[in-house]
Length: 297
Image (tube, rainbow, N blue to C red; front, side):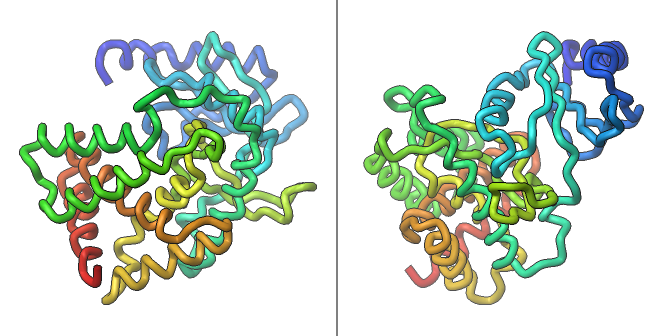
């Protein structure tokens, strides 16, 4: 956390108290579990309605998240009720348990994620600034994979690294700013929380939280959706994952091979990323699973 983080933590009770006064809230004293870069706690507004207060840590600016949530206006994403840039705080609708915790078949979970994402992708792309040259998602992931693999002493199996870079090069070559949409950026099941259906969202059962919100190929979001599920791949992992790629691609009217390429690149880049911050077992799990997917090529 460092000195800045500790000062922020020490100052957190004052921040919460000021926001209670500014927004007419009654905030529970104990924060919710799961936040890695923010304090998140339950609250009730002046009318007794359940809300969630989110306060970003130093270095974790919530302005971009607030902008995307405001543009979405609750379609596919959690509803935003207020934003205080000076205190780096958001007031959000309270949602229910996560899709990760739901006892559902994988295919049904994928359908729920796709339903929310297709609404997120309707946010006008013109509202965000396009990535500059070399800053599209595939280019940044290429650099992440190469730099991290080198710095960590080449933990990635050579065949896995070669395939990830091949897919990354294809996605760089295919990048078309005119076909980019506003993507969530991190739509894993723990970021999908249950919700009551609302008018205009086709009976949506889950809304997404914590959007990164940038312009990219919509198939990128589906690749993120599929980067894990390692424990559910079974004895024929490639066949199973290809089936899920097809399911999502058909549901979202995208190309299944493109979804596969993003999913593989995300699996490898995420493995290296988590290895880099010291989660050896989790990182190896991602990279080992990427190696098992080489069979059947």
